[in-house]
Length: 296
Ligand code: ADP
Ligand code: MG
Image (cartoon, rainbow, N blue to C red):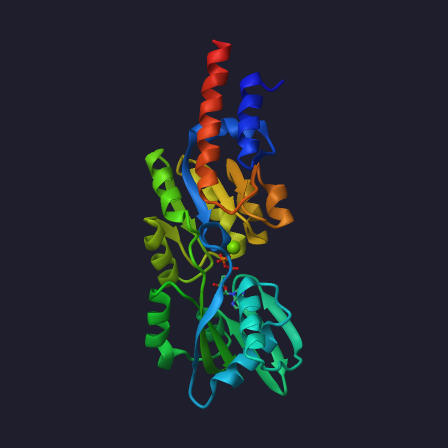
């Protein structure tokens, strides 16, 4: 049976929007060292918005937005939704596409009006045959400012860079400070590129991060840390994060979270606040101490 102190801790946690799906994981919290935080939706708000459109040679802004939105209209990715929203706000009408395909952690491809489109990470779009070398400097600048940059290629030729910004949560800096003060070591994990990752990590005060991690490799990063001898707490919100949440010693789903993330987690945070992760940790540790005191 669950000791009384555990139940007491659970009640206190629940009042703060911290729901335990397993009492066991709550007891493991005291042994945790590494805290793996997904970038998008965990550290940031997860609501990217288009902030700059750079049309490359021969294209104008309206045309590249129209094409990018067409390719993205069938994607459920937050970046895709942001592109579609920006285009509908400008009243640009979007053509139908054929042969839509989404590649997880990379981007999408589709055909429109006899043209072949690729929209996604610069690396993905280059892999689709577009040489982004002429836009490299602009790309680096946009990324160094913390933007996620999505590229558009039309028939294998570079057509645009679209910069999207997603703000860090209001309490992110404070939450990271509190994590460190508790002796924990935060590690940021993202599918986004190296430069953007570095800028966001620096903004919130995280030194250790892994960028360009494909969705299927997130769990592998958790396992790597475990193989180094650490107990790992993983915090995430997306479908991509479910295997990593399962692999971790304690998995925390944050925010609205997708159903699959919630089902894969040991602890569910009702709100968006990153600080609730630290609250959960402290409640777990102190309820463990009470349990030990009650037994001895
Ligand atoms: P995160 O780890 O931030 O949740 P993802 O793994 O979902 O990111 O995606 C990683 C990268 O792949 C994005 O930063 C983006 O460059 C690219 N990407 C994935 N899906 C799309 C899409 N539908 N449209 C544009 N870019 C995409
Ligand atoms: Mg994510």
